[in-house]
Length: 334
Image 1 (cartoon, one colour):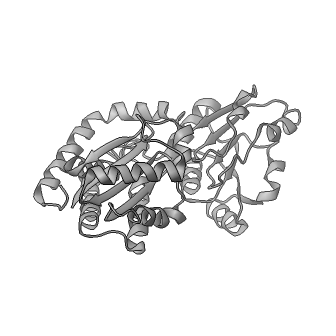
Image 2: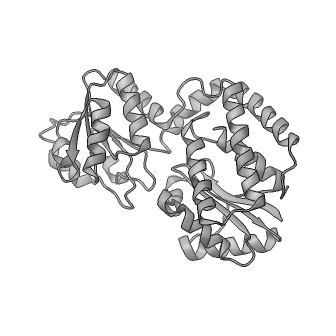
Image 3: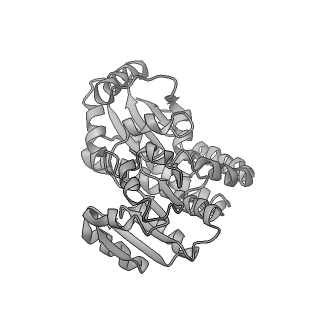
């Protein structure tokens, strides 16, 4: 049995392409099951985040599995395995997964969210019964290596989440957050970490809205803010300065007409809109409005690159640990 990985990420593909192959957490098990339904694929795990979608497979024939996966991508997503996708085989695939789990392959170097996101993808496949000796050993080893990397190096020093980078961006535009009113759209984990970062930098007026009002109330209570019913969030546009949007909606939540309606009442004040959802929550055309500063996950790479420069030496140390740890255990499929 051999190990094979095919994927795309923020470095190889623009957000317009990544959002086409984005898979919700609730469907990861189904997607992994669909892979193993192919006769040539014995085991499968799908990982999908705002910055990447990756397919990990175990098969007797890598060539046959690659053909089956290419057919699946064409049928399921209407995509071909073009230059935006990368392939990793055997030990290279194992090394890549360890880098991903350790936060070395993330837009924000050392970010912590990816560890849990990969665990969810693996847990979904495990629960669906589509993993076996190759992928179980691989992922369990990768999680162990990831913990050692984070505990033994300074890779997590500084801003280590997309939410923190978004707040850095807000401070660059407004100077400080003490007088800024913030609206968080979506009450998931990404929204929670972003809201925490906002509070840690001085924000004190926060509104939270979510399709599930109970979740909005829970997050607002945790952050000392106010919950808004999802049907009413448009009314708050006239008074907020910063919008952080991270829902799981398959379509645009905020459109140009929403902003146009309140521009005069806002007295054309600047508004920062950070879209950290994939698929994107905010129509890109919103960014054409004069006083709107719109950034999606790709736009955050500028700030992420600054942190990356400061930690290049840490990358070298982390990769040396990964090489050493992979060398200690003979994993099947390599």
